[in-house]
Length: 224
Image (cartoon, rainbow, N blue to C red):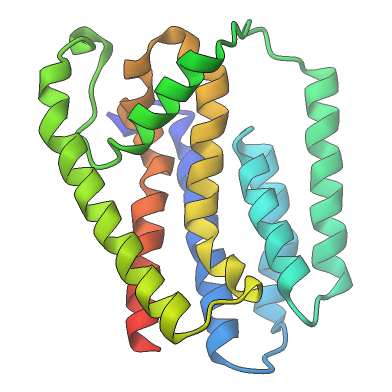
């Protein structure tokens, strides 16, 4: 179903950028005193433009890039300049090409949307044709909660208790931070169309970065 929506391809690109950025952050943490290689510099400089010009969700990626640049001890001037420029481009796009979608924001609807979306990450896609089959959500939602709680507890036990987690390791949470930002944005802009909209397949593309990020952290922590 994802492949029939042409706007999905930019989202796939952003997901690829997020995973690549996470790999770079883990590599730099493992290799102490590592400096930006030419490849990393090019990626950190070019990827902000690719993300912000591909989709509005690129703003979530820019925030992840910003965290990476702030945490890195040695930051090249070029990636920082490109990230700031990308933020400006995003602002200009929003000023000159305003969205025609009217957002009827309701706080409680947005909260409900966020919770249902977050706790049904592993649920199979659901379309508008069976949007009210709530009973079929129970097992996927419960299993999703159990798996994510297990990963969270395991990561906390290893990273916090054994590795003495520091703020400088925040960039290891890149996929998780991106996924949470994505859910918040969709909660604000899409909750007016019904809670079921949060777990259609096209949104699962980016939301799945949360459990993926937990799995990566779990693997990294055990290796450490």
